[in-house]
Every structure is written in structure tokens, then in C-alpha cells.
Amino acid sequence: MENLISVIVPIYNVQRYLEKCIKTIVNQTYKNLEIILIDDGSTDKSSDICDNWKQKDSRIKVIHKANEGLAKARNTGIEISTGKYLFFVDSDDYIELDIIENLYENIIQTSADISICGFYIETYEKMIPYCSSNEFVVNSEDALKKLFMHDNISIAIWNKLYKKELFEKIRFPNCRIHEELMTIYKLLDIANKISHISKTGYHYVQRQGSLLHSEFNNNPLYILEIGEEILGFIKSKYSNILEEAEIFFLGQLNKCILVSYKKKLRKEYKILKEKLKEYIPQILKNTKMKLKIKLKSILIAYFGFSRIYKK
Image (cartoon, rainbow, N blue to C red; front, side, top):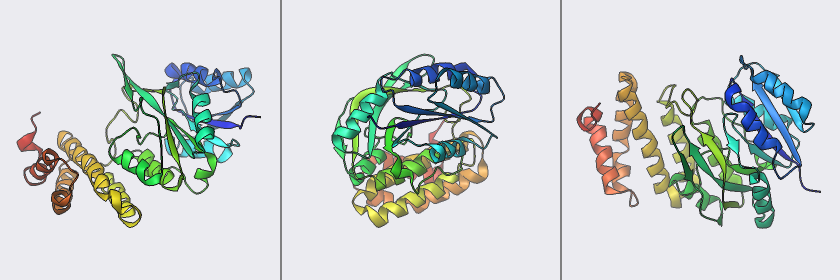
């Protein structure tokens, strides 16, 4: 018999998108699913939609809970899941009908701990494929390198099939930004083998008002804590790819400085610029960072966006 796969769907006020999301899960060509719908305190009709689907399909479990955020909803799903494998779907997204079967076949054939598919970034105007063409099998170090270089492995948690045992000691941190980054690098670290299929099977729908679509709604200084934690970890265990990790962190840091500037967060803007100055020696020593990025970072650190960015 095929292994049970638990599909975890955190849900909060997405009645407009939820029917489509659930339909693409229950109609998967891979049938041995445990579908866990975590209603995180929805105040619209999402709760009713979940309950209606539970009546239609015996594979569906519905958990109604007080609103505590995406991380705790996902963690709740992990804790009650009984499958050998886990797959996450955000409730305003949807998936191709054969993607779980494709990922499962790949994870079995390659003996991988994580199997990854490509995805579409979907807006009202267009649908852009991302990480969709390459097939490969890599170890942890190479997977982390690809993550940092945006090379067919993204920080997204939802376009991947995981062995549940990876989550034995890992949970999503309770923060409203970068919780996926804080989780995915740990999963890639403990996975013995990571595979990527050529199939593009996940539709990430960018909508106005969604958590991911709104940049750094909380304190942008949080990127410092995250970045320095990851850099310290990489330096201690994967020193061969430290330069790639620095490039990734610098991109996030510069983005946070820009957001602080545009939102007139003067305190945060000043602190982030000073932190960037501290990293200038490492930036100059980095042999894999493009000269254009080095120069831009130096200009931001010493002159700020008021000189190089126009509203």
C-alpha cells in the first residue's frame, strides 16, 4: 500500500480562494492522503467551507482554533498528522492535480528526504514559472548553496514534500516574517538528500492584503537577528558556502533598508545602515559577490537611499 501523506492547510479568512484550494487537494491523483484543515480563528465563511468539505470527504480533518498565526497553525497540523510524509498548501493557493503523486514517486525513486517542484507566481495579470526546469539530486551543502543563490531552491515551505521525521525537533517559529526561511535552512541541513523535479506543480497566488505580499509589516530589524543566526550557523558548519550566505543576507538587508526608508522608519533605517557598514569589510573580501552589488551596498551604507533612490 502507498504511504500516507498528510497535507496541512492553515486557513484564515480566505473564503474567496478556499474552495479552489481544497478541490485541487481532494482531487489529487495520489489518493492516500490525510487532509488537515487548520481553521485559525476565521471570521468569514472559511470555517463553514471546511466543515462542509469534511462531510464530503472522509480523509479530511478539521481543526477550529483561536487565531494564533500561520506558524502555530502549521505546527498544529504537524503535531496531529499521522502520515509518513508532509506537504503544505497555503489556503489562498492551489496545486496541480498530479503534483503530490509526482513528488512522491520522485522521493521514493531517489531515496530523498525532501522532493521539490517548481511553482508559478500568480497575480491578476500574469503567471510566472519559477524553479521549473531542472532535475537534480543534491546533498545539504549544495542545497543550501542553491537556496542562498536563488538557484531552483526557494525559501518557500509549500512546494516541497518532506519525510515527517525531519520535523521531529523542528517547528515553525512564531514570527510574522521570515518564518519559512528560519525553518527551511534547518530542514535542508538535516536532510541527507534533496531532489528537484522538472514539474511545475504549485500555484502561489499573490493577492493584495496577504501576509507574504505585504513586505516586512513588522519590525524590519528582525532581519538582523535572522541573518546573523544563519551566517553564524553556516560559518560553523558549511564554511565553503559562507560567501553565498553573505550574498543572500546582504540582499535581504538592503531590502529592509529600502523598506525602512520608504516607510519613513527613521530609527530602523539608521540602525540597519550602521549594521551594513559593519559588513563592508566582509563585502569587500567576498570573491563571489558582483562588483555592482558591492558598490551599491557601500553607497547605501555611507550615503543612504536619499542619494541613490528617488521616490
